[in-house]
Amino acid sequence: MTTLPIVNVQRHTLSSRIAMSLSVVALMALIAMPWWADSGWIRWAVELSCYIAIAQMWNLLAGYAGLVSVGQQAFIGAAGYALFVLCQKFGVNPFLAVPLAMIVPAILSVPTYLLLHRLDGPYFAIGTWVVAEAVRLVTTNLDFVNAGAGLTLRVMTQYRLHEREVAMTILCAILLLVTVGGSYWLLRSRHGLALTAMRDNPVSAGSQGVNVSRLRFLVFIAAAVGTGFAGAIYYMAQLRITPASGYDPKWASISIFIVMVGGIGSIEGAIIGALLYFFADRFFSQYGAIYMVVLGCLTLFMAIYARGGIWGFVSSRFDAPWFPVGRRLVLPNDKGT
Image (cartoon, rainbow, N blue to C red; front, side, top):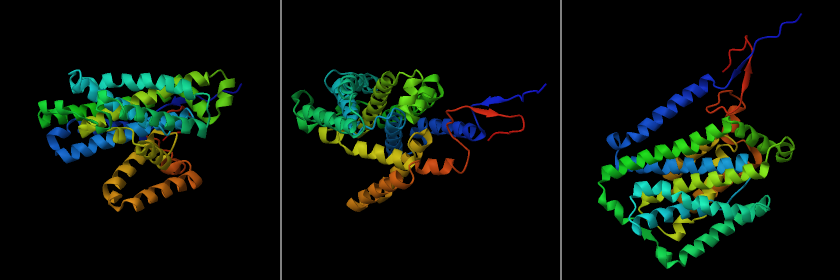
């Protein structure tokens, strides 16, 4: 009689435990920044947090649901304007207005998806851009939001600089927990298995009982809300929003660059790509058009020759995931990673 070997199901690795510990330390350091960092560093931290969140939402949308959107700026601008209107027109506390502002991109995402869900591939992408432009044009001609002149968040002058910085760093920590942590939790759940199957082959996933259309709809709404959350925080920090900035197509370009270069379909890739873009923007944006051409060529190179991005290259050589979302069978003589 043959005795079957005892195996264990491993969901965490040494590398993931280290990454989790460093993530907790990073979040605590972010929250504590008003007490140890100057205002310039805090502005940088807010901006980087928003880049990571927006890229993570685009990665969830394109990397798993197969919905390539170039119109996520619609939700960034909608949430930003909702925040300013709640504060300036209705006197809502700006820090309480941030979660309320996410209702607007959630509502906007429903008719947007219902309008575009029958489109596929490049047609869906173009459709999202058209919707974003339509929302921008409506905002530009809406007197209630001061039309094309934009709005200024004057109510923030009621708070001391230290109070604003404390609130902003806490909001950024919550933003990262919701977008990065929420994506990690989702991908490790049974819905994550369905998303992974849908990413690899939506037809096959549908034949195995996955409700592809329903799951894509829910992911589209979740990505819109997460993107809007980041947009509200970003423009709260800027203290001003206009249709040209809130609905700027550059947000789509940033998301595509970060995810394509970092590694589509992975949480780690979006983080790496966001860090790369952030530091490149800090040190090389002074070169203007040349800088943008280099970023575009790098994105094109990754799309053609290294579709897995930086993280795909690393993970193909080192089995050390930061945020493992799968399961691994470990034999008694296998010590794991």
